[in-house]
Length: 227
Image 1: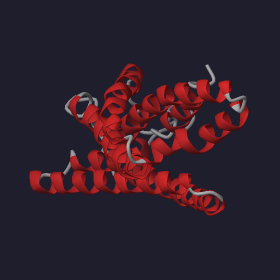
Image 2: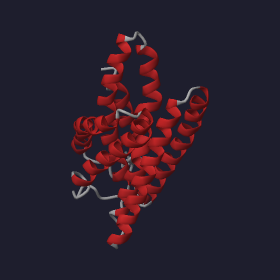
Image 3: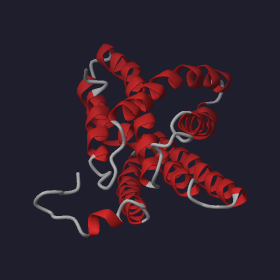
């Protein structure tokens, strides 16, 4: 329960940001479940890099994890008609990332309980690591959301590639800072602050580009408020 509590909270928080056309909850939960599933192949692929802590944590894990999360969203919900506005890319990327982070959290918390440091590890991961997956994955999620409504396939591919690469770099930087001590702790605080600001900017940009925003411009706030 402790392992899944942060993921459930952040999923609720982000789902409420989808104001104009909220996604079907069963699809959001399905994406969360896919995040749980891909944690196993990610762990198996990462075994090939255990001989180098730096290579594993800073390069291999960010590339493998972000690509698998992206692949799931691209192959499952992206082609569906419910994926109908730029904000959807952020929502489904968040749900998948939080599913992945939640199952990852199980292992960390069991290890922390054995070492009698459950409290610090729980709060550290709840505040930084679990939402960190959202901060990374919504970069390519926002790009995926924009790309679906771009006419030319070459432009779509360029948007998606740029978003995916940026997410991998951000993930790698976060992991690098986590390896450091005092300097790393300060860096994580600054990184998280900037990343959250950028996430909220991506959310506002996605909402502003929604084709559903027009129907709310003349709504009656008393009888038809946005979600």
